[in-house]
Structures are given as C-alpha cells and as structure tokens.
Length: 119
Image 1: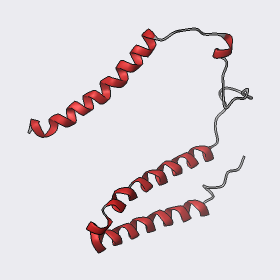
Image 2: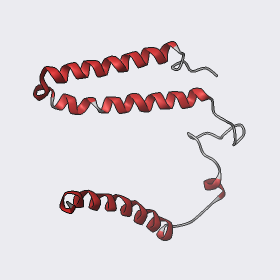
Image 3: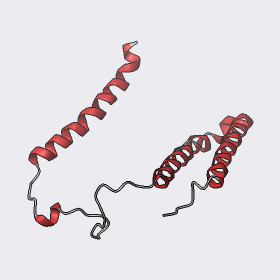
C-alpha cells in the first residue's frame, strides 16, 4: 500500500519544503536596503489616493469569484478536448451538458447584474 502512495507523499513533501527553503534563503541571504522610496506604497506606477482601510465594493469580489469559477471550468475542457475521439458520444453529450450549465450560470449572473461594474 505504501508503494502506491509513496510518490505522492514525496512530491507533497517537496512541494512544501522547496518554497519554505526558498523563502527562508531569500529572507536570510537577501540584501536589505530600505530607502524611503522603497517604503512608500506603490500601485501601478502612481501614487495611491484615499485611505488605506477603504472597503472594496462587493461587486469587486463577485467579479473575482465569477472569474475564478469560469476560469477553472475552462480548464476542465482541455482534457476533454485531448481525449475527444476516445470518449465518443458519451463524452460529447457530457460536455454539451457541462457547457449548458455554464451558459445558464452566465445568463443568471448577467440578469442579476453581477457583470455590470458600477461605482
């Protein structure tokens, strides 16, 4: 049983250890030269305006969540496209149903006004 899960456990251990080692190495070995220019808030090359603790609109979060949902759903189409011929009619019908659910969700979000950006 261990021989089946051993490669996954090794990959998981590497995936956890490598970022930790790189972060610690960068923190310990990296040059530290904080100048006043480096310490100011920076956003897209322009000075920031307004308060630092301004709450963002719910529309921002809703748009971000919708983007993530539709982006992840699009990722599921790549393996299907790669195995299109092997899946046959069953695979085609399943993907048509999958895309239909996505379209219904998109129409619902559109009618609710989730895709309109207002201030």
